[in-house]
Length: 568
Image (cartoon, rainbow, N blue to C red; front, side, top):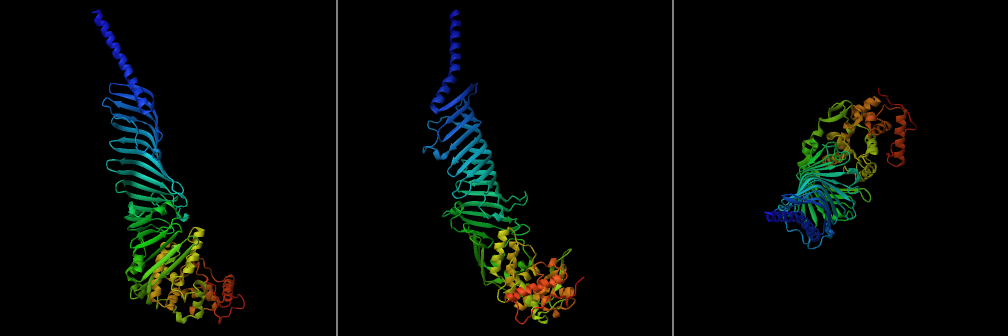
């Protein structure tokens, strides 16, 4: 009996020794074989748990909160941080002599990865069943000759088996200098993003391009169902089923294109100095862009250009869309100096009601002090002044001040557009339009007064329609009879009677120049007085000195109110 007790005690002691020493032997073996340091350990009937496991393989290092080894040799990692530099990773990859156990679920507080031009930091990482997911993260891209770009990620996953990556949200901070400052571009947000690794295609349900003034509902640019794919020959293909732009330079309200396609050379993306062409297709028109020169060029049929304009646009342009023939080409650059060039042979179908209605009584919308209202004009309407009944100096006064090359130009004066663009870019807003008399007529007949690129483009094509079908005298006659001369005052007939108490047939030279001088800001017009007379006189003196006043006209000897009736 005594011997049995002694043997039992000996066996139990040996078993206790083994239970105590086995994990210690295992830990010593793990530290030696895998070059790790284990801070502490604990054991249960189900697993061996290693605490505060530190490792440094050169290209990978970290501190793991817990590593659990199960009875089935499975391994789980529970918390910790890991840093990986893939540029330093050995060619054979992996941990030499790595564990043969099957790796189960991995949870990390943070994972930092560096590879070439990119560095990534992701948080709340989970690896399970061939999928890596994270809660938040950021990626820094360091591209040659460009400032560092930062990408913010949220709720992303990568699947090794499916070969795909996905994010709920991807935000890209755009550094200054990438795009013209006038756009104020700040960040790009992609929502519900998927990346197919095998086909190398990125898809996003929604893309929001923001600037500092964008609100949650009105981004600078909104793309629907956009994609980026490998186009071959060193180019990326960018597409979207819908493009919405909200920028005060484009239009006062949001404008929409039905689809967008871009062929973007990677070299142009990586190096702003690259001279590769980027092709941008909006609707039926394709633009050629060089980012290094801030240069854009396009050549299409006149009809294709109009069909490619975003919606909404004016009813007049809708009517004109299918009635143009010929081609229109343009070139715009802002560096080293702003420059515009235009060539076109656009012709309009002059049988269209858009033109024929102007040869009889017609109605158009005008701006009143209490809002928009409809005004009647045209031959035979009340207050209409036929050009043939007016003294020649009336038309000459308006031509001298508003459009000196009116008789020679084709409705669009490129030199004026160049000056206007340079001043607008310098001021950072639309300060000057550079419009000819025909352009002003098109605006007054059919368009709003918004100082935007969208309105100027519509104005250009409607100007070409007018120039295609009307003589210069017909254009001038319409212009004098429809433009604004003061608050709620339209047409030279009503203006002449309002300011001078006479029909326009009897306007004197200085009175004609006074009326013409109101054109830049008719809403600010005041009744003619001695100061107004002196201003008109000074204008005529300048024009005479420049040789722009007809020789047969003599300047009044001095400022006088004779023949002027002050309106009340």
